[in-house]
Length: 59
Image (tube, rainbow, N blue to C red; front, side):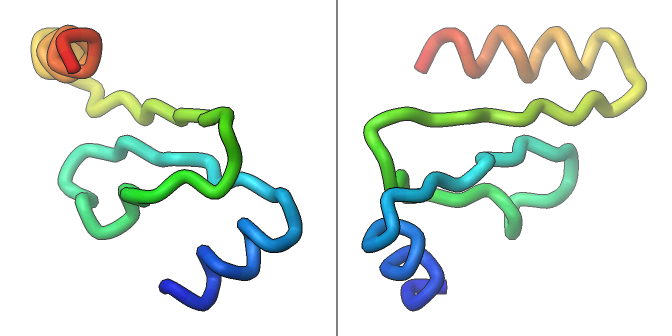
């Protein structure tokens, strides 16, 4: 993964950070540009989705 991050950063390209329920392995923990694009994937459970969104707003 570090090689991919270095490649993106050297070319001025960013990741689409993905927040998908149950998939912590695809949440990228580094930014390669000053801007972030975050993709929120709903779980289908409104209460859980609200809790996840509220948690994200407190960070």
